Image 1 (spheres, helix red, strand yellow):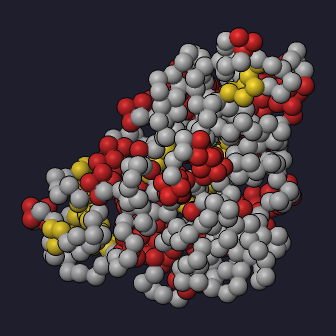
Image 2: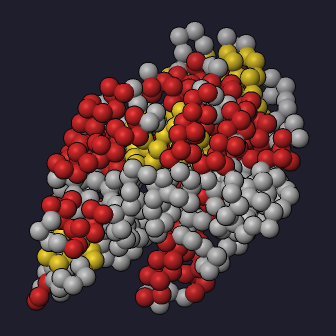
Image 3: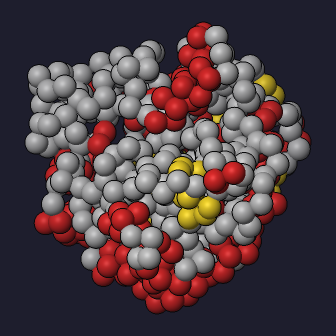
Length: 544
Ligand code: GLC
């Protein structure tokens, strides 16, 4: 049932610091979100996922939680949160929280107590190990952090003793072998669900259980050394099944998993009695020296992940570059391209996820210097590459490519000063995108042909159509850069046609023969019979 709700209505991700600032401190907040609920309702949004809003030193922008039971004062108070719950409920909306439990912040009281007293029970909440070699001067193994460098940090004032951090040293990993950790997280989940939260997007959930601490195979920029010892382990599946059965199911909630490092053939297991849907990562990577993913790669990856019972379909989130530029070329056909990608999300099987600003076809910053960046990955990568004497232009290229600032720009609601994100004269926490004057909600509201108005129409179509939201999917033979498929429910059939490229293409004749068809939506005007496709053209047909 819950999976069906997600599939039909989709999920809209809010990155709170960049969504809407109600009090003029340059940072988005909960009251700002409340002020925009009518806008979101007008888009047809029914489920909001909030990136972390808990107290945090913000080393990793809130993915380093220092208190699981409160609200970050920069975002408001618990009373604001309760008002948000009430206002969303009134509009028939549901709220999903981010649950970050692979690690905590190093400021979390559990970790502080673990450091202060080696005999404290909190020691065993984390993963401490003695080093190797003379006086333990080397880390316990060769694992590297996803954020570069060793995954181990020597404990201050305890020579030869280390703790594990798969992310930054300010994000120590929890020890899920310890029953007390499960019980503590269970309390967190119950606490928020009792406040009316619908479920959780579980951060890097595929890595929580480390199976062994042996040295790992040598990794790469995108695959840390050691990952084979902690990705998708039997322990992880055990914990997810238990959490689902004991806490989520009785409350009719949902669990969405960020399955970092999980290969396609490992993914299905997570959807069986564990997660409602998941995010894979193959879709995020166009290749080391590519900015834009090749259409044929996009097609191959989409088709492969559609084999899952309920994939989480997404092109954007707070960790990725904007999709215009990444999956479609910027320039003459970018508006059609943005609409095509939105249509794809609305036509594929599974759960469509949208990131704030995607509905207006937002783009990456034109330039954002290292100084203007707030992202730890960008900073760490630059420092790491310096250590290998990588020339500056290549360093800049790689740190911008793997940096995660681009989609984190403050939301552009209007052209006026502050862009409707904050008050005039207020410096936003991170600079506005240079295109905010041109690409914003106000302008697009007034333009019938805008990406925004198309988004509304397309999402409504999915939500009201059983075949598109819940039907089976069948792929049809086509050009490697054209995606053709049917969505089929008991009494309905939809033919979905996507030109993933900026070239003109043909639809194979046989596909359009012998059946009556009517176009339900398209990003171009054309006759129903036309079998040639413009750049990035897409159509969804009703077929009888
Ligand atoms: C996830 C988050 C990312 C964060 C990381 C560590 O990938 O989306 O923003 O840095 O986990 O928590």
